[in-house]
Length: 576
Image (cartoon, rainbow, N blue to C red; front, side):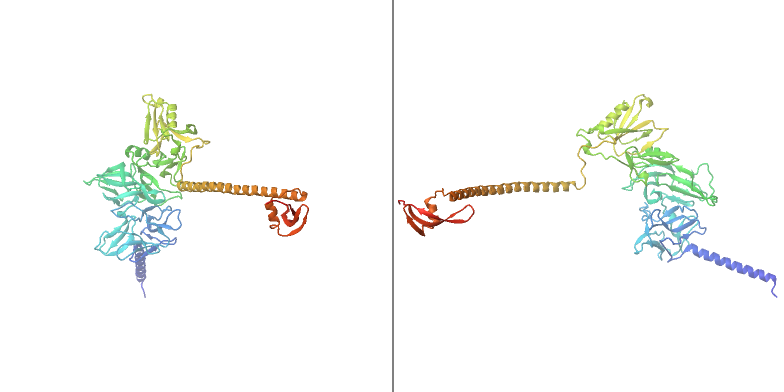
């Protein structure tokens, strides 16, 4: 008989075996084996971390149906916020991220050499992870609960990890050393390289703008703090450690992080603001979003004006107005301008009316200045781009000076009543305009924008367009041909007219002669010359008879009807 204790032992054995099998299976699913791969399509299942907080795989680029990013994102958040993405320069030599966008049916695979390799459907390599150690063999890869994707070696070290190659975001347990940096994206959902960078420079971590063409950094616009390591620790604090090992708490301020209850991330935004965010791990409602705990700089519009030494284009691009709203730049276009790209307002504005050299006299004055008027904007300023100053100046003098000056696009007026010394100042600006600002509390100036009147039209020639030179040459050639043809036609017409005139004159003479012949024949009153009689009688060939007045011969004379009429011609006696 089997005792009840034996049943308990058997149940425990089955439970433990099943549990171990389940955990073994789950562990096997967490690790990525050599040869495992993912494909880029809507049904692709990403590689997730053990807790399911993070996922590694193909993320569909917003607004595009067939392009994907190989990325890491928060898997339990509806927004699926991306914290890392593969880029073609994920290395120390050229760290600026250029996203390795993949088309549908592309593939990423962990190969035997310890590399993650991203290839397109034609097996062309789009991206490959670097290798930290070359003398170790690959064991597996894994997506960790920290948000770090690692390729592990057989000796338990990491051959490669995503934390070493950040893009625009750092997470708790991640750090930046003197070689590390963050790069902003071009826009919130455009993952191309943006205009801002967080990097180590001369003993401090700073924020700086980047020249979009040379990719070189400008001077820093905000210092984060002196030190050689920027650490986002597992307690949720961002710290800067100096060479002596002393930490400086950077963020958050006056808030105690609770990592057991919240997700945290620090991101360098496309607008140049470095921000610490939090998100509840167990949201209670359906409208949760990332909350801002801390950000720097606090006024990005003013900060870039004060600290960039006139370099860069400002947070809103050229010819635009920047207004700080809850720490973020609100970008607008001034009167007479519109956005270069409505979808990306911070890329700048363009002038609606394109001025041309034809608008200017040789002395630099404006042609037909009455075609223009001024639109005003109070509390606005463009601190740079001025080329002329009038002081003292009234508003009328400022307007008139800018109106007559062909190069003047906007004039900035400081009203005499608001000036400390009681005199007004007028600054004339030319394009492009940079670092425009609007602030009701701190700016006591008025911007006067010169724009064409709504009913104005340019009377001078339009500017040359591409291909006009060839068109002008064609017109010149055609004109020459038409001119030559006209001369030729005139000469031809003159020759033809002369010919017809001569023929007409001859015809008139013939007709006149015929008419006279007809009349003479009909009235028998015409006289003939001897030679005509000789020709008509064929040299007096046929004699018809003789009479008292002479010999009669047979002859033929022409009539006015075109026929020959036979006549009897008498030949009188003549002396030879």
